[in-house]
Length: 65
Image 1: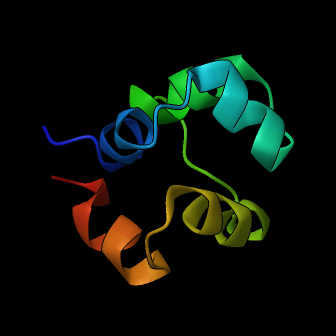
Image 2: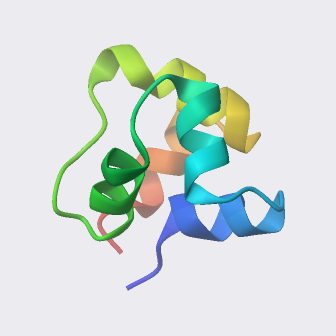
Image 3: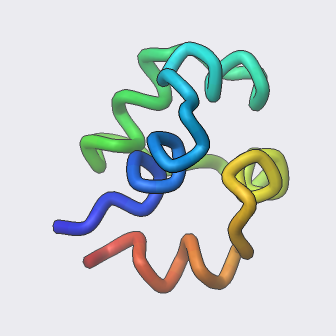
């Protein structure tokens, strides 16, 4: 399974905590997203995709892979 969040986070040299801080969530939330235990809320998508430098479409297209 391709993990788009982790892939782009690592590409940008961000730790889970650093990404969490930029988005305003906990590092545990990032871990859950990367493990596909939970999904980002719609209200978080804009900050997430902007921080990861990807489009919402790109995130959603690869989410279930």
